[in-house]
Amino acid sequence: MKSIHVLNLLQIFFYSCCAFGVATLLFPKFIKFVTEYKLTQKIRENGLSGGTAKLFQALHAHKSGTPTMGGAVIIFAILATVAISRLLSFFGIVETSLLNRGETYLPIVTLAVVGTLGIIDDWLNIREKSKQKGMSAKVKFWSLVGFAVLGALWFALKLEWSVIHLPGIGDFDIGFWYAPLFVFVLVGTANSVNLTDGLDGLAGGLLAIAFGVFAVISYFFGLPILSVFCGVIVATLVAFLWFNVPPAKIYMGDTGSLALGATLGVIAMLTNSVVSLIVIGAIFIVETLSVALQLFWKKRFKRKLFKIAPLHHHFEAKGWSETQIVMRFWIVGALVGIAGILIGLIGMGKAGIL
Image (cartoon, rainbow, N blue to C red; front, side, top):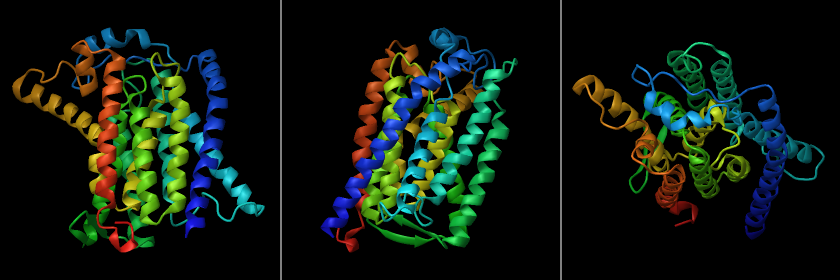
């Protein structure tokens, strides 16, 4: 048992180093490429609830022209590391690769497919001459729903999953309702992370914390390969943050935020940790709620609840510096992450963990 634990830790270290190395080498070249071909950030002209986004433009005008689509490098570095692990396994250097039907197939497919959707959205945002930012919200939403439905069918028909775990209470078979829950979690997490990706380093840091937490939960849940995969994502995000911290040299764009958000949701479902996800992703949820409340308040009371939504922009409009907001959100993200680990491990006593 001890040797298995050591081997797993070595795998996490080795593959994380691979992912970090690939991403660190590629980002400078990618930044140069997107700058040369003007694949840069376009500041939106319309607000979330209609009208012009004058306050947003005033706060972020200086960011116009910053290279974007950095999520493509993140995804490539992760997939390249998976490919390296497969080659090492093929030649007998290691016993198993990161490509595993029971643990990583769906997260990898989610990362690739939703990442492609994000690339299309980012490309439209860059190239379109209209005031609309990227593809329409309806097209993006229903594309995510369509993929989530396929994922839900995989869980229900292939894996025959229909049980959710409530920490401290037990497992509950929810039957048919598992599929709608899966769709809600995947789409909701993808959109929440996408909304949070609005300041230099904000979403990247929070995602690194969240995936780090799920690396721990996956390990104790009995999914060691998924744990290594989460570690690889964390390492790639750390490499991204090297170039994304204020002032950002590149943004992940929808390519990264949608793909990583959806992948986070899938991993939460694989580890039966929906309740933990609510805690771990508390900031993502609050950011989304701030947008929903802003829209409701404007429609119901004909005025704004926040100066600007999502919430991080509200604090920005109130005079907080970008670095203050990001650092404080990271601190809260780390605290809820620790709480998420504790909640996630409740009820695993049968495995000899608690």
